[in-house]
Length: 443
Image 1 (cartoon, one colour):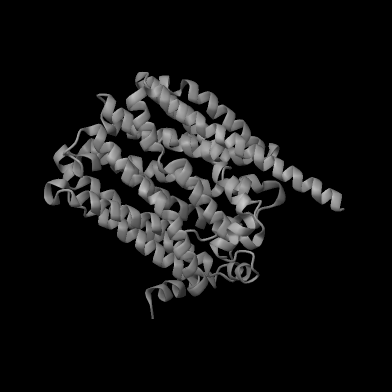
Image 2 (cartoon, rainbow, N blue to C red):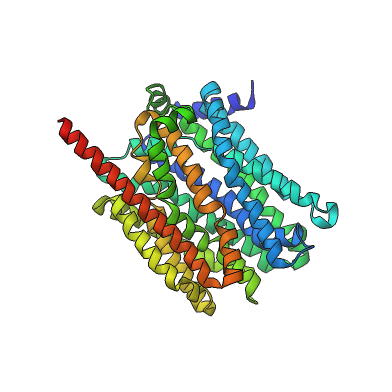
């Protein structure tokens, strides 16, 4: 009996004695997304405070961080490939097999980074090994799409769709809070020698352990009769990517650009400010990591609030309003980040509030436009493209722009993301209105 079969059998034993309801699905979604974002932020933090010194000590700190951010982007380029590969596994062997293999690859890649030897030990090969592990993480993330957010959406009451749509997004601030406080603990309590010797590696081992817990939590749901019935009815069926793009390419294209404001801001308040403070101020990273964790609490509350607001005024209206607010924020955000401790706190808190309000609904407004046959694959592909366009190169672009043209240029980068979101929302609205008029004429 294979390990995947054993895991599925154990999960099924638990599920057979417990009826699954929307609350159970929500818990599974949050656990799964938290594990993914914890992995994400553990690597992101290390890419600022560890890898430049460990892997690229032969160049200046700014260049080393730029190299580190370039490797950071590889996962976003590899993720669509992972989606294509693992959707084939899903169609052939089932969702539980896909999840088990994907999370095994993710865990292996993450642990490989934990054991990574530095430049002092193996020279330039350290950077190549880091890049290989990062590509492995990206391919694995492409396979971790389990359809649970879509299942949650299908079970959402008509008047609470916004509230249900924000549930998967809670994993981001939770993952950041845990990752930031864990790194801050080691940075503040270990000597530099101990931290760079072994302390930074510990969060990667924790990430592997969390993935094991997340795997069982998700398997417990995907093997349930309710989920299987939806799958068999074709409502959450994995279709081929080419077929999905042919049928729903317009929705995928719009969906890839709707979240750009959220994703640009996502890195402007998580990865980029840490790199700026670390490189261009005399402050240590530990204190700023705690500021980041505390600000993420405001983001968590804002995500919940986004669901309540969206159910009153509509998700599209909320995203439109927050994109305008993000555009306004981009005009004075650089001055706040460069304004000392008080300015940094104001920048982070305001940024996370805006991020929570927009990020909380960024995936639901377009995903709901997919027909049920293509929702499973369409949502996965849209998410991949949105993260690649909006987030993959954001830390690198913002760092290089601000280093060469000042912080104001990072604000301009954020503004461009807001403009793309506004344009995509307008196009989406035109398409929706046109479809409504065509249906009315047909009637």
